[in-house]
Structure formats: structure tokens, C-alpha cells
Image (cartoon, rainbow, N blue to C red; front, side, top):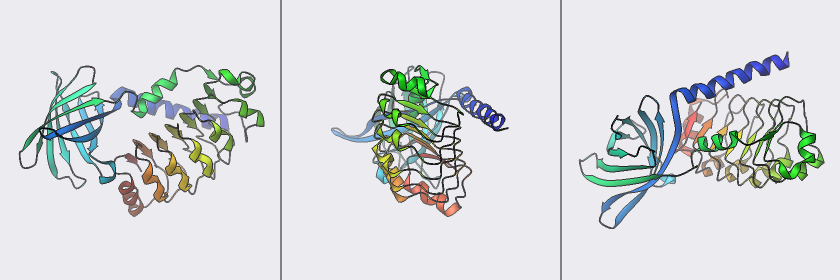
Length: 301
């Protein structure tokens, strides 16, 4: 019965991922500037999703701590691009009009303010900064699917994929695995975040989805290389404040848990691009609070 349930979940997860691939391209992160006056360049960051129907959605900001403005628009067949800039209340505050390179590496043109003043801008794509870029990179690494075999070949392990093996804890010998950059311990029986994982200084991706996790160790703050963290389908009721120490984290999935709040320290995840909190008992007021803590992150409730 359990295998059937997880098989159904795997099909659902696969459909979600492939359905996303069918309709959208990855999130692109651009960094550049608007030239207000000769020699006066205001830095800006754009996070935009290029949809396969040529529409564009996203946000941009000058300083992350000051909040962001939303962007929506379209890429035309000749690679010209038009974006409308809005506040959270929906007020139009400016427009971007220009051109995007065919390889999507550069956007340039003119930004026009609400009072009709125009200034040139240019922004370049940040290679591998999008979380989807890490998903793609890690997807093609050879994986070890047997824990004992992986430990015997510890120095060679870059990707560990242990799915539905009934594991409740990691053996002491796991410490031999030092070079892993992707670890999946999905659909097992962990009720605590394994402290052994926090010693993987190079790990970029961890999945503990579909376990029995009730708590996350504060030692998670050691994972300074972590980019992708999946802890969905667990039993978490709270998060440690140390979650805010994961300054390189780009993607965090906490959906289908028992969370009704998150710690204030989550605001320190300045690079977080996408946060999933669906199927948690989070009320409307708390949702608004979380949005204010992470103004530059796409959040799903």
C-alpha cells in the first residue's frame, strides 16, 4: 500500500515538473543598471520567467531589502521586449522597452518612469544563478542508489539517490562520503533531519521529501553551499531560526507540512527565488507577513 501511495506521488511530481517544462522556460536572473545621468548608474536585479507563449512575468529591485516591483509583458517575434512595472497594489510606476538577445544573455533598451522620463538600461544574464539551472545541472550527474555501495566508493560519490528503502538513520560510515553535491533520501522513515548531512560542505541539493520529519536540526546552518532544499510531505510544525543562515539557498519546498508560521530569520534568505508553503495551516495574515519578509521571492501558499 505504501509503495502504491509513493508511486502515485511520484507520478504526480513527475507530471508537475514536466508540465512546467511544457509551458515555461527557467527563471532568468539578470543584473545590470539604469543610467539616470552620465556616470550615475543605478544597479538593478531582474528575476523573470520567460513563458513559452512569449509572455513574461517576474520582478526587479534595486536593493533587496527595499522590496521589489512586479514585471509583466511580452517578447515579440523580433526579440523586442515590453514590460510593465507595478507596485504590489497594482499601480504602474514605469515601463521597460527594448531588445533581448536571441540567446537570452542580454536585455537592453529604455526604462520610462511614470512621469514619462526615459533612461537607458542594460542587464546581463547571471549564468547558473537561476535555481532551475542547478536542477538541470544536477539531473545529469551519475547517481548511487545503494547506500552500502556508495559508502564503499565514498570518494567517487557526487549524487546519492536513496528512494523508499525504509531508512530511519544514517550509519556512522556515512561520514566517509564527503564530496556529494546532491543527496536524495526521499520516501524513507527519517523523523529528524540527519545531522550527518550538515557535514557535507559541498552539497548543493538535499531532498528529504516524503519522510516523517518533525524537526530540523539547528546545525542546518552549516550548509552554506546549499541551493535546493526539498522537505515537502513531512510533519514539521516549526522551523529553526538557523534556516535564515542558508544565504545561498535559491529554492525551498516546505509544502504539505503542519507549519502555521515561519521564523523572522527567513528574511535573510536574500537569494531565495521560490518558496513552496502549500498545504500548511497558514492564515491570511501570516501569509502577508511572509510576503513582506521575502519581497523578492515567488511564494506559493
